[in-house]
Image 1 (cartoon, rainbow, N blue to C red):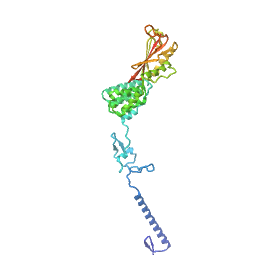
Image 2: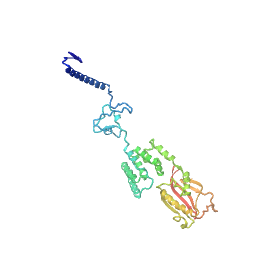
Image 3: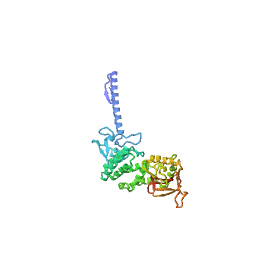
Length: 374
């Protein structure tokens, strides 16, 4: 009689003893394995799924969801910021709503403004300009009727037709502000500020007295935008001084940034005592409406070239500015008995330049006046 693991057995020979030994070893191994699994379960923390340890080496466990998939498919965020269940799926046990909440979506109208094409300053094809102008007129009618939602879509169509149409873009901001879409209207105002073009600055400053934008003027972000634009403008005197170098030599000097790529400049050459045929391009009292910087540059270079072929261009050294216009006074000019200046023949005299202004600061050039000495 022998005892194995507390069990008495009869010894019937070496073969039977080896068989019994193998059986006892198997029982012992099974007992050991079962004891080890229980220990592992007891040692494992029973934390909720959302309370995973912090740090890159301990990534959080994914919460159990009824249907496998991304958390974006399981929850959506409403316009009020509350997490809503989708298709009957609820957050896993122990996971708070804050843990499943996604980043706040961009409001629809703000996204629409940000998706507009960049402001283009080069002129669009004539067909695009006409299409944008037509949509802008339609939008104004809707705006006047109080249908601000439809007006927004119509102004947007105008901007898409011609991204440089600032009237349509500004009017879109008016419709957004009237509809209470303050954040979207501010986003559009920031677009105008950041573009930096001359007309863009004027549009930003125009909101100060436009009742359509009244809701924005109380917003904390509004005044810094407007103040920054105003500080970037120059005085009328400084604007006229910057024009002088280009007027004296339009070939070597680049056209000043004060000439808009799109807006017209009215150019006039006065010739009262000379033969119209000798008065320069166009004859007596030339009046030209020049659309944009390219047209202005081309026109003045032709005038300047013809003047240089004769006795040149004279521009006074003294500036006298009033109401947006600056006159170049020639203090050393010869005068007759009546005090009138005696002009030299075949000479082009620069009389004055005028600017669109706001708060006594220059925005862009609007007029150039010359005098042909005959």
